[in-house]
Image (cartoon, rainbow, N blue to C red; front, side, top):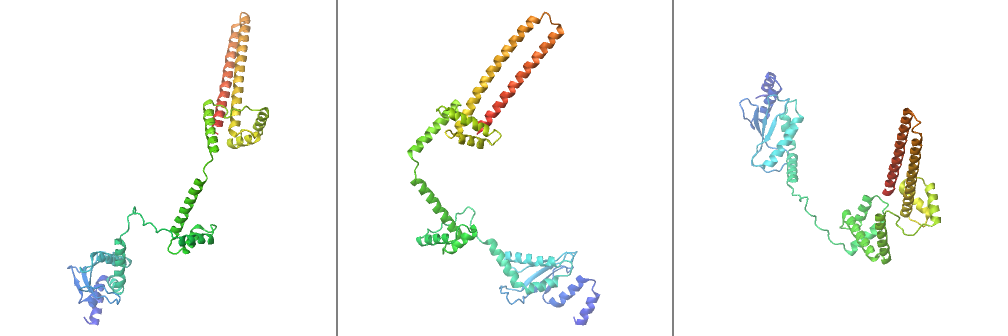
Length: 364
């Protein structure tokens, strides 16, 4: 058509989609073919003008376009049809073109897509090749063991030691080891760290072997274990040596100086420091033994006193039984029962408190 005839056709066209079709026919009339009767699906043969595109194909690039009913609000679908191009490359090229089409949604886009594809053909195909190579690159399985590094030579060892002296441990750890590795050619930061750990572990093992525990210390340890075992069975002091008067006075003074409101371990540590000649465990067991002895004495005395009081009351009540009225006699019995319950409640409460305190002290 002549230019004037094209202008008349564009004016007579019903909309933007029709105008785009007329312009495509003018530009690609020899390379454009319709695939459907409604002309909403067509193919265009494109010989790329990109000078960097060197992909060898037996024919021009063949692109198919399908316009949906809601085009251009919904972008067209583009597909590369050249069968001499590997299918995995064609799929990636299709994705690239359709992604660009989505950016142009809302306006006629076929001519813009052809222009974009023609100018960037080499880049599009190169990206597709890179993506495919990255996907198909063989990666070692997760459980595969890395090849063991080569043994350290004496020269490398000397360089490592010199670098560790040059870059002190006051530096930031990652930066320090990076600097150390730069001084040891052929070794990475990880290699240097692993070598340091290996040498440190070997040095510690050698030091522990060269200093065996003396025989006397083992005997003392065995003796201590025996004493602790005996203590656990007997529930008494871990030492058989009797407490002297001075030690007892020091213990009592320390118990008053450091009250039970303190943290348990701290309290008994300070008490043992005051006694000096006794350990913390010995002080605690001494305190526990004396406390139990005192409690037993108090309980026996209380029971004896209660027994005496009850005997006196019974004798007194028998002597006065004939002269007391029924109501007054009932009042005395009620009072006696109430007092017995109170005495029993106080005794039980004291025993529970003492048991709780013993359990707390035993935890130490």
